[in-house]
Image (tube, one colour):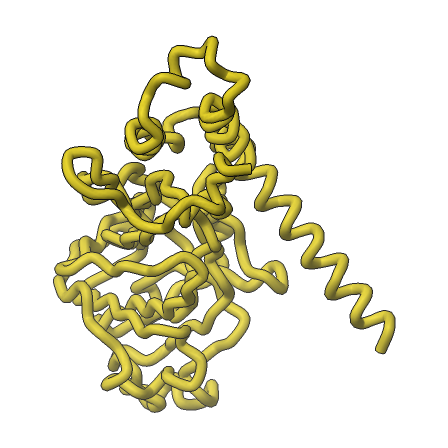
Length: 290
């Protein structure tokens, strides 16, 4: 039908009814992803990946991470695509935080980034938090408890996964050697199958509705759009919406902050969970065929 949003002309319109890709404010939601904390280990650093989910968002912006321990001179780094194979390649990383912190063995302390880190939906980014203070109680981290790493303990699991990583036992960042010869009896200063303990603070900049991103929207909101655009049909002459110009309707839909509707967000979560279950079944079926 002519009112099919996926067949409408791609673009943002023109003139006073020109639509936006995303709202003007930097982020629409500020979220904290906090992990479980089993107090398994402490040492100089933790290197791990975060992976954003494929959502109707322009980007996710990481603003800080939170750590606890004896802390000291802390640096926080990132690398695109994940940390694998880059543990000792300092040039592959960007430093976002470089400050000295007082000990905080019980409460998490924020490591604010100098420049926020932006990730597109479906992107993987390696993160590395390190303390240059000698000793073995600088940063708390845990053993890996599942193949997929840990899910955040709150609604932030909609946005990203915090994946397993490696602990670093050297007080020199990216070093493959111990600075204290006593620790050298333990072999390599890298320990695999470890997990980040703390919090990641970030914001989400959601996409606003436009015809070309209609299929990316939560299913419930797609139905709402369809209901509005049905007013274009000749049989909808009794609706006051029928008498509005199509560009005006599209402009109104573009201004809807759909992420503020709890029912729409619940629908998005259920859709993501359903997609994850289908992915697991497909992978299992593929293994059985082999």
